[in-house]
Length: 117
Length: 110
Image (cartoon, rainbow over all chains, first blue to last red; front, side, top):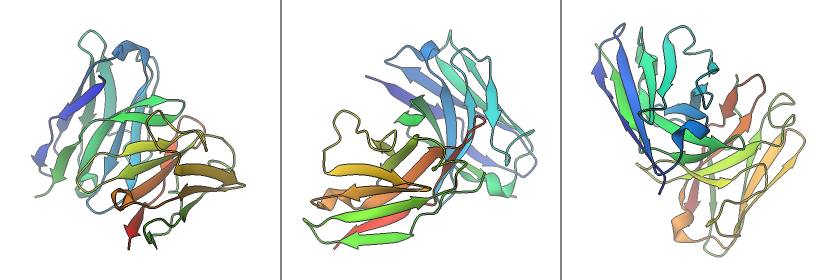
């Protein structure tokens, strides 16, 4: 059974860094592109970043470009999101998701990141 | 990367049908048949309900259907049930390795 489990969220001050992890199980992780999607409190979903199945390509939303880095370790079946220069507006629940045919087929349960002084 | 436009709320009585719209541009909804819909109950992760405009993943009841006309996609929920009360989000591929979501619609079953 496919499963994605995020971790690493918490409370952090503006300007600081945080690294999120997403542990995958129940499927061949190295065969799929993976995304991070976030949801600010009471708001809609926002695409954050995508990484190709082999890590060869990475793309970011304009709102996080230059501050966030998506990466993966296929030997550990784990996806990462390194978040630097955090801003108050980055406060959100962060989900990792597996994509098939340009749709988000499986989602983790999410991890909450709160940026506050 | 502008968000897609969804109505903030929709409602219907049990057994009725309701349609939720999702309006984008020719660069996203209108340009690709990669529109998907998600149902999200409070405090839970989204669940894929429709992909590639009108396809249902295994296990999603045929009460859920999708369509698209020009730059607007639609999700129709027929035979409304209490469990359908949730937030619904649309998403579209927007080209150049970008994805975009709508602002979400809160569906109330009266």
